[in-house]
Length: 556
RNA sequence: GGCCCCGUCGUCUAGCGGCCCAGGACGCCGCCCUCUCAAGGCGGUGGCGCCGGUUCAAAUCCGGUCGGGGCUACCA
Image 1: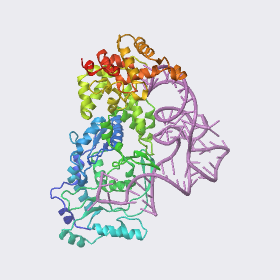
Image 2: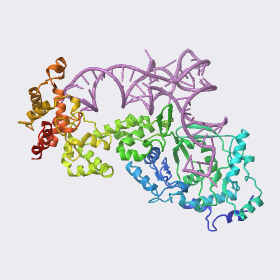
Image 3: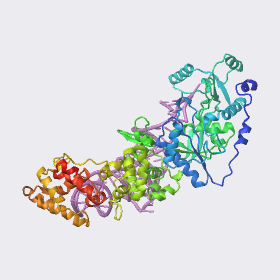
């Protein structure tokens, strides 16, 4: 075994012993049953919706047990770090109300960024080296590639283990020679040799029985890097122990690493944590489903949800329903406050279904009051649709009247907003600034109705002459019936069907003429309600072009 | 290749040996309402991957098989 003096010379002379860290991060004083959970984002500048999913579950466990939820940035791969990644996370967590109890701003178990914890990892790595539970490895990339090539040829499992592990039992003098020559090395964990099985209980999947790890995994990356950082495995064991984490919620791609992790906890003398491996969010593709992909699927990114304007509550409700089917049966309000139970978590790998999300979202928005919608809409628009934001600010009263249409004083509220970006399509026409008036009786938006231009113009003139804006809905609509009858429209679609040649259309077509003139579309909420919301002046202004009015008349 | 996880309507799920010739939600289809659309009301479509076994009885337990996914990195 390598002499302690040689081992120690590899680390800073003033590097504290492991005891120092144990004292520095004492066990937490928390009530019985309190869970300490964490989320460990890697700062690649991209926030995956699965990250929000995992963070939400972690945080929920802590909140409902009176524990602590912390965020620890896993930036041990410096080549993948992106500068503004942290602000991206801040934005996502903020949007989804996933504030951490502890992070670099507040918390006594920091720093909460792995690149700032190098000394801690070094202390423990040195300790493992001193105890012979780890060793220096000088194998080059080429040598490693050769080893696995030979293993494949020999049909034995690939990896760095047993007799294949070049430096596992190297002569100390050979190690010293390499060191003297300045050769770069990594620190490897000396896996306890004997093959066998390990059992552990996953909080979601129950008792699992896996093959024991025998790979001498790298725990400290190459010495030729300016900052010698640990691999995920080593950092996980040390950080989660020192931060006194009780339950680790992570993707099930980590399942096969558990045997290694358990060995590390054991070698380090730590109590193991409880694991909860969650199924990945997937997407339907021809022939099956696959993990949501960062590159191929826009809906994999939280930015998609934020920019499109899905309310956080709707997304959270949807995600909670995926985590615990039971919560999907509860009304939104209750589902958001009821605890997620790991034991009730699905193990499959749910498909993210945007159609379902939109249904939830539409329901949620429909339950909001007009002012509440306006408020949320404005916040969204300020960031993603400046023009709409300006209009909403300038026309606040009109916006409230528009949002009240078929929403206030009705039994079932209109559901035409699934997300904030639907606003323009659904409500844009209320606002003169966003509305494009018809150009005249020949406007192409009127063409599908099949009404001759002269009839259209005459009908509009008749409607405008003596037009009374107020009254109740019935009276108001009566004016359209009157003008329609006068211009050869059938009083009902049925009547028109019976005698298509006797009419230019039915009341349906006549109404649609008005609708297109007022809203620009053949689909809209109740016409009477819209007319009252925009007011008489605007109503007349929009109807006039239909009458084929000359420009001079319009401008006065 | 090796190891591991998973498999109920198109999708998310309930189901933990009899309450299930499988329940709910979303979607889809139809009807009703109706000046359009959205919504709403009512009805319908549709599933235990497959094969064996255990049992009086299986979606539920066991074995196999097929299918999907993951790991097998000095990425997390």
